[in-house]
Length: 125
Image (cartoon, rainbow, N blue to C red; front, side):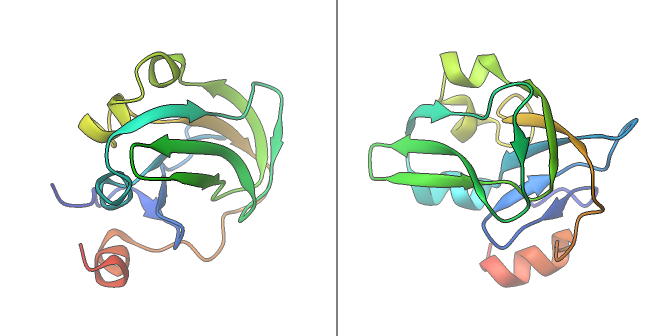
């Protein structure tokens, strides 16, 4: 699977959709999901939490390791994907579809995000 062109990417391996009515969706990339291995636990920010670009906002635990989840944008969490909490394997099987993590109403324009081609070059994926 290639990195979808319509998304933007962080160097921490999260992806961000373009805002729809001020709300963007956040997930981790297929590259990150593969590097983690089988994800067995997901801790997401809660609805109403404020997240800050570049700062940790959750955790992903796999059979290999525990990895921090970073927010690619600053804003307020408006939805967390309960399906991923209930079935963390969605992060591995569908990182760009059903394995999304949370939705955020952005309060600042995202900075320092990469295009799909730039992320592919950065990650070597």
